[in-house]
Length: 416
Image 1 (tube, rainbow, N blue to C red):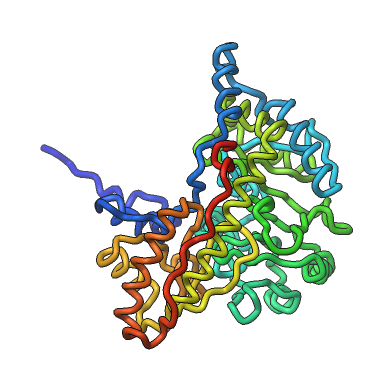
Image 2 (image 1 turned 90 degrees about the vertical axis):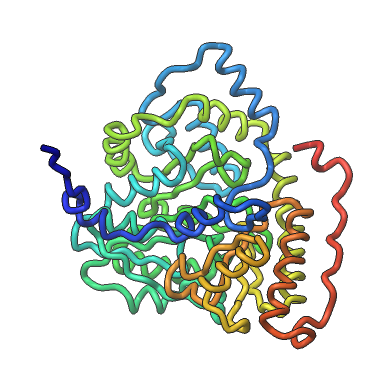
């Protein structure tokens, strides 16, 4: 006699009730179609620069195939500290205040599990990256959303934070430059927010994975602000800046007691980040700045191209100051963000992410990643333009033709 098991009933109800990622759910559809241009995944189209890949090959030739310390390679931690001191004038002890992780995703999970208890509240700006709220829920905490909007530049304000704080509030999570909006935030605004944080004795988790991809103004590293180094967990990594998404190397920087707590979870789960990825990250920090700057220059050019394209389509678009995402308003089409993304995929074979995948405040928008080639961007925008024209009415909103992109400088690609 065969007895079947009802696995759904046996699942942890917290895990069972978490909805699947809005990005991944949508891209299950994309994977089944041919000829699709994807503006969906937040991944650079550049291959990791050759000298970084080569350093990995050399490390393998030398037999570097073993575990590293739970904290990660000391030489990499020392280089991270030098990088932060050089960029932001903030210092950490590489021996006990830096933890190398399997991408920023693991660092985020470790930070939340080490900090949050059932009943705690964490303040999360919305729209927000899809992992933040589920990771908080898995920790037993309750995510409380700070609803930003295009009218305030998708920025958190001190008033929002003050109003949301309750006796259960423990953490404020920030991510600037922001995914999915591309919003940045100025030092003055952050100083005001941090006064509220200090007044209420909160901890800040600051996801600064896009810090190097800042196009307007200057990025402010939160631990560099007065009184914030000791109450901030800084998360960063190599995926976006150095085109190293597949290497899965990130890090956390913070108070040694807290880093030790994160390490406990890390050593019982991941143990350590892959040594090959850590070797490559070390080379990226030591010798990869010029290639990184070239890639950032390309992203900035594509950013301008995207803004021009959306303007000519008749889709109002918030100007992103960082990251590599545009977040155009599609309400003029009369479609929801899910309908827009679904019909665009079926009719024009262009993949974008519905804005509501990033929370209620994302409804009426779609996220378009411009970290793809100018040629593919141009073709994708042409297809979108025809799609939008059919929705808005020929000649009603589209007042200009889509211009050709600015030609790339010779030799830039050859340096990557």
